[in-house]
Length: 458
Image 1 (tube, rainbow, N blue to C red):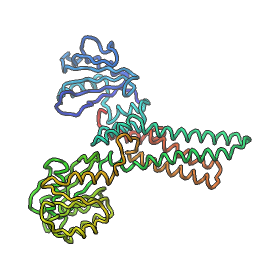
Image 2: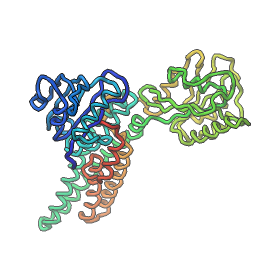
Image 3: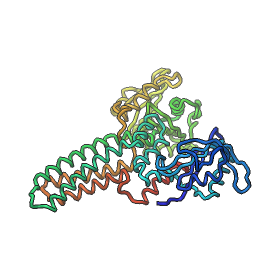
Image 4: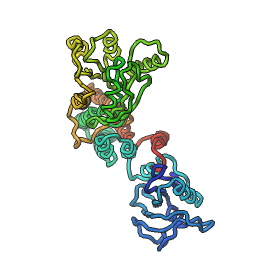
C-alpha cells in the first residue's frame, strides 16, 4: 500500500459558491501548513476544526486565495489518514491555482476513486460499501439513493459476514472431525453441514429475489417508446419528462433520431428512448432512424407501444406487436379525446395479457395510470422503503449466483452420501465467493478496475 500524500479537487469544475481541494496522507497537514497563513499554524490546530486564513505561494509570498481549512487527523477520518480540505471560492482559476501549489509542495494528484480506495485498503469500509459510495453518487431516484446508502452503511456486508461465519464454523467442525476421527462424529457433522448449508442457501436466495429490482434502481430501466409516426410518442416523452424535450408536430416522421432522457417514475428510474416512427420510407435520414428504432427494441427492458385511438389498426401496428414480442411491454392507446376508430378487441388479442393504458396526452389524461402500470410491472408494489438490504450491483449478483450453485452442490453431495471432506470443498468455495462480494478475497486487479470508475477526488 502506497503511503504518499494525494490531492485532488473534490467538487465539480466550474463556477460555484465553494470548491474543495482535498489532501490525504501522512504529510497532508505539513504540506497544507506550508501554504496556509492564519491565526494559528495548522500543525497546532485541533483535529476536526475548520480554520480561517489565506493560501500563499511560498516562492513569492503572494496571497492566492481566502480559505477555510478543515483539519481531520487520523484515524477518525474517511481514509483513516490525516485529511485536509481547503475550502476555496468556486472559480476555475483559483481552485486550480491552489491545487497546483499543493502538488508543487509534494502531494501527488490522486487517481479516480483513490480516496475511497484508501478507505477500503485501510479497513474503514469493505468493498461492497465502497461500491455503495459510487452508487450513491450515481443514484437517480430517492429509492435508489436509499438502497445505495444502505449498502454504504454496511447492511449488505453484515448479512454476508453472517453467512460466511456460519460456513466458517462448519468448516472448522469438519476439520476437527478429520483430525480426530477417533471421536466418530461423522453423523453429527453431516447433520451440521446440512443445516448450515440450507441456512446459507435460503438466505442467498432471498438476496437474489431482489436482484432484478435492485439492478433496475441502480442502472435505470432501458425503456423504448415505439409506434407509427404521429401517434404521440414524442408527446409521451415530453409528458413523462415534464418538459418539451422532443419536437411535436402534425407532420409524420418529425423524430428521425433517438432522443434519450432519464425520468423518475414512482421511484423507478427510466432511461427513456423516443424512437423514430417505424414505417416504410424512402427518406434516407428517416430510414436510418427507423433501423435504429428496430435495433433498440431488441435491447430494451421495457417497451411502451403507442397506438392511435382515432385510427384503424394497420398492418404496421400489428408488425410492432410482432417485433416487440417476448419483452416486458405496456400498450398505450393515445388520443382518446378523438372519436374511436381502433378495434379494441383486436388490440386485446394482440397484447397477450400485458398491461393496457388509455391516454389523451393533449389533455394530460392517463399519465397517472401509466406510471402506476410501470411501477406494478417491475415492483408489484412489494418493495417498501424500509426493506433496503438487497442486491443492486451486477458483480454482487454474479457472485451470489455462483455461491448459490456451489452451496447447492454441497447439499447434493451430502444427500448422496459423499465423505465430509469432499463436501467441504464446495462449502469452502462458497465461503470464498461470498468473501469476494465484500472484498475479503478479491484480486488486486479487480480492486483497481472498480475504483477507476469513480470520479476524480472521491
